[in-house]
Length: 489
Image 1 (cartoon, rainbow, N blue to C red):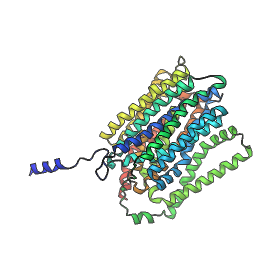
Image 2: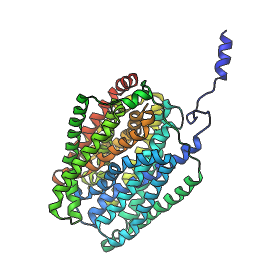
Image 3: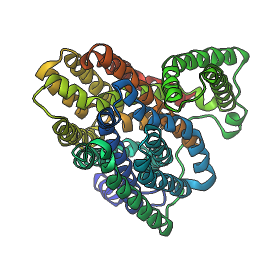
């Protein structure tokens, strides 16, 4: 009897990491989609050296240079829902083609932007590129989780994000060579042309490859025990509607507190009439509240899942922490090691910081394949709480600790993403859009940390990522209980 069972088990098919529901390998599709992670990683890596570059070339302060991140991440906030709708309408492939088109247009715009030489022109190019990256992230992140068994989704997204980390390494190194070490004076921005023209060409080549390739439109598993009819009829009660209204009022109020100063900076930059600023701010606030209330009430079965809704908050906090550290790494290095030049600090960002970031994702893929993802997330967040505390002390220990945070925050984005969309089924694309929208946290943290850096010191600015990592650790610690309740409902 024992021998028979052994024989039966040996004949049982082993489900691979990239094996689809029909038993076919999806590795080629995974490799193709992973190339997109490299592209937007490079674009994001380039952004992180532009803060210091524009401070010097356009003679602006740290808070104003934070608009580089604001343009980037506000595009994520505004484009995330449209990107999800595009994915639902055109499928994964159609959404990817739209994203690559926007990246190409935004990258090639840098050629006339250099001739214009105005800050708004560069911000416009970054905004369009970020809109394209939003489409790619909204689609590619959840797509990696369905290119194989659901239980190994977190491993696949971490592998893809490791390639993304390689792009983050290349971005500041290339940027430092062409931009920070480029021309000075009137031609200080000329070095931006070559790297962004290269991004445009790569986007065009990938566009052609995806047009010619087969990209299956797979669907995620829904782990909720409710039937499709029950989900369609699921509506919030009057008490729940009141709770939704209060929660959205708090969220909109917090966002307004941080985003209103950013809008003020943009208003001055574009020379808009001051009298229009307050009506525009309040009008956008009311519109955002109304849109949010309608979205939540119409998709209540999705928003009642606490592992998802808190996942949005955790991703918001993570991107805020990551962007703040990445954006002011050069400034922090110069503040804590006076012997380092700006160009050297830019190279360190890529050669040390982002190498550790990529290594962390590679190691994290292995760790997460062996341990529960939510516990890995909580553990890494606790380590970064300690490291950011050391950063606030400054000096050489603070500098070493800052680079250490790159390694331990590397797995957070893909892991939170995978945990947040776990078991959403048909809601996966919408859920993915909303988690991508939470990337707006990056738009808020950079100017806020820049303001602290202007008024005090960059090391004191690290209180922002410190608080973020505390709350992320709590999410990782309670995720399993939340997900179990959501699946049983």
